[in-house]
Length: 163
Image (cartoon, rainbow, N blue to C red; front, side, top):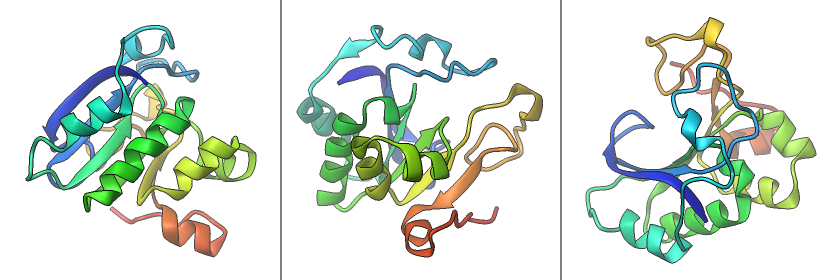
C-alpha cells in the first residue's frame, strides 16, 4: 500500500490514543487540504499491510485505527486488510473520506463497500475551506459528518453521531 505517513498516539483523529494511517492518493484534492502532499497517488512510500500492522501494534495503549489521507477509499483493499487486522486485536476503526456515506454505499466499488462495512465511524464529505472550523470535534469543515456506520447500514440512512 502507498503510505503518506503513520502517526502513533494521535489524539486528533478520533477518541483515545489512535494509530493514524495516512494513505497516499486522493482524487478530491480539496482546496485548503492540510495534507496536499498526500494527493499524488504515486507519491509517498510503499509498505506492506503486514508492516503497517506491525507498526500499529507496537503500542499496547492504542485504542483504535484511523484511516485517513489522502483518501483511504482510493486504496480500499489494503485499507480493508488493515481494518481487519485492527479488529483482530480489539481496536475500533475510523476512516475519513471525501466521498459521502451515501456515495460509498450506493455507488462505491465492491472494495469500497467492503471497507465501509468494516468501519465503526466514517467522517464523510470533502473538506470545504469556506466551512472550515477549528471548533468541530474530529472534522475540519461544517459539511462533514461523523457517522455511526453499523447503525447507518442497519437503518439504510446515515446516522450522525451528535457533537
